[in-house]
Image (cartoon, rainbow, N blue to C red; front, side):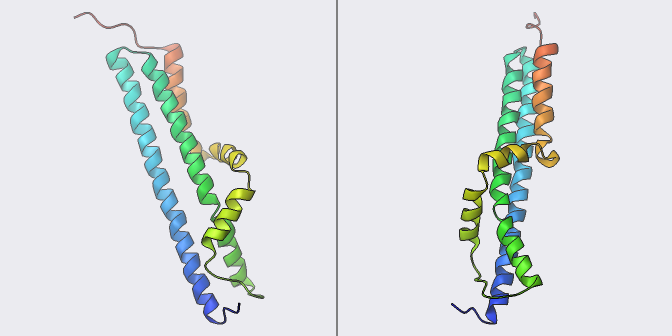
Length: 155
């Protein structure tokens, strides 16, 4: 199928849409971080106010879960970059037929061919993903081991 001169316009629209999707992923990632810190920090404080050491482990675990969620979220976002790069390369050197509006096809292909589990593990150690989850999880676990809350204070 020949997309003709309108192809560049269609590819421009597709490119801008993918860029918006990528930015939306980043916005949601900030929400994941906010929930992680809020819930885990509340758990740490609650552990000491209620004198229940086990809540420290729950706080540490919740930070770990949010860390995994963010890494998986970022893995989904990364699947869009293959198409972004392909469009950018086409604009640098427009040769041959390059069909527009292939967001879902490109995402699905990228998602299924790039080892999601291995990629998620690699992404987990990126500093922008690692923080603040790893710090909160480590602090809560360390407090449990080194300075757990003592028994209830008598009234």
